Length: 287
Length: 282
Image (cartoon, rainbow over all chains, first blue to last red; front, side, top):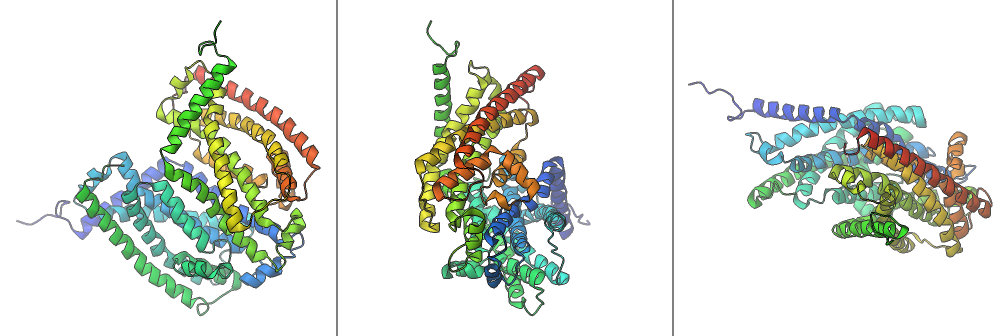
């Protein structure tokens, strides 16, 4: 008898189909709540605005303090400097909420246990959802770049565009690896909002969102060096604002590659551990 | 005739308000992690601002900033703005969002059937959060003094006196907001964005004179701008937009107008919702 490929007899094809189905379902849900579009349109400009206006005040009425800023950052373009930081931080923040809450929301809706009974690897369900979130994030990036150009006069496409795209590509596995690890922690500890505030706060304080790492005290610089976002922000600022080339940011790119390999593995292991633990304790449906 | 809840008096309204506040307070204490994060959250947001200030600082301090504000003490300027902004956030979310949570929980209609004026419900919902915000602000300022060198040299009592009409004017905003929530039902993004815009434009994070002319006009039309300005003028001796007594007078006028407009709008919308029977929709 010829064995047919069915869902109860898994294959690569059936896993991919499941992943696609979850991605499609998440996209349908996103389209049902179009208010997220308002957030995607408004926040990229609003978030850096407070810092930009603060920087304008700090620069002084005649730009008297700009030389101090230039000495610390290598540029007088504080608007470009700030939006690059808030853009990458905003992306991470969005991922923490979206990917981090994916499993949590299924738990709250009461569909997590039944979905996990399907003969599909649990990782495939998570990756399917992550793909949709990634697509929405890329939309956020494109909208941000257009708005920065039109409303704030910042051209993020200046400098070596291929390098900018490379930096964005290299930070993707780190951001989503973190997102998946975070989702696992949320299931374990259940205090989801508080945990988002904590994790995104760490990146906000240490990754140099609005300032160069050099102004931090020594111990804070050491923490900053352990965060992938620090390297992505520094490299993108160097390329876009200072016209840096590949040789100038080689160290940052290597760090991003290392994080890009390590963090998805950490995410995968954390997820596996969480799934095993939840089955052992039988508390998957509790929230 | 004795005053009972079915014959509302100011005393019964006061009892209703304290009952609501007590209930909110008990709920708050059930989630102790929230208290920790209420203090930490503003400090986390302030850290990038602090280091941004460091990036612009020369050996003699933030002299560029003094050109706009009249003080080189950038972080004290920011911390005062943050504390006042916390109160704005509390009133915006406390009034608008509390209606939304009651709609979602399905208790709005039954609560409103009680013989208590509806604005009393709204004010009651903010009492616990205002008290909590005040306590958190004190803790935040103590931590701010330790971490960012916050200090004030002016008249603290006079500054508190200025903050009171500002806070009451905010309640006017809050009533109008609650009306919008009744109409639109999904209010999160709206409250979040408006709260951010109002605190931003009234100068919680910078002297409003840095704003482009057109935006500055909007800022000058907001009563809160004068509140921020006067409180900072009194505490830090910063340059003010107008003489402080004039700013206080403006705040008092705004307070009366805003509360009146807010209440009228809220009453009209609420009546309309009752006529349409849409109170329990969410």
